[in-house]
Image (cartoon, rainbow, N blue to C red; front, side):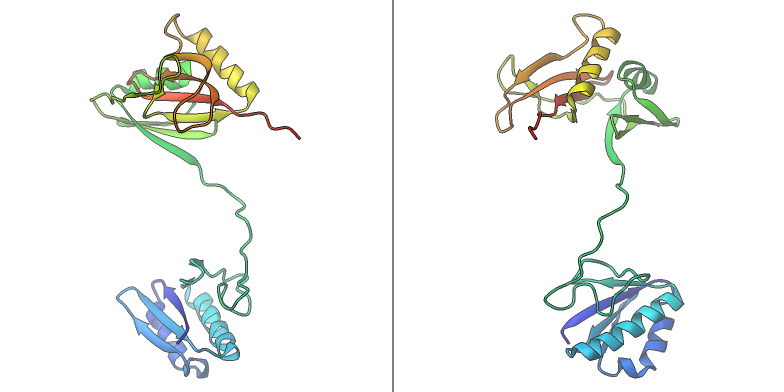
Length: 234
């Protein structure tokens, strides 16, 4: 056998019974585990096409998930094609994703009220969710999950003064206009000279490209490094 497909779902065992009874299963090798059915497909392309078509139809009928380990992804049962996605020398290229998962950062804070003031009032984040033990806020396209933990974090500094930045920080890279607006907000909502940990400047940190950035921190000493994106010529 040269190619495996995996069937998963609550009714994979019912699918196994139906597939075993079909003529298309005669050249296949069936192996089971406690949670899935593994189908070893035959080598001949015509036999693979028939067995694959039968598996797709039965997966739809039984509400099962058909996974192609060689492809590293589930088979799209709405548009499966005639052969498994990774089969042959010219596998099918899946379509680009139409939605992106939310980018998320998890941080610990020692006081939720102060954290809310830091992120929403000072940084300008939008409050998404608030519970007795955590906050969720959205800032510059990033979701921050702020969980309550009494001990404050600690971190070292990288580089030589005045080019130092925290070794551990959340890095946001913003376009020039957004970068300038964020820096202006920090100046207007902070108390000089404490509006920045490190004020806006071009910094050279070992191992990284030089970039203009500034660093701020929240009430629990979580550092936020804000960088200006480089301008690319057309």
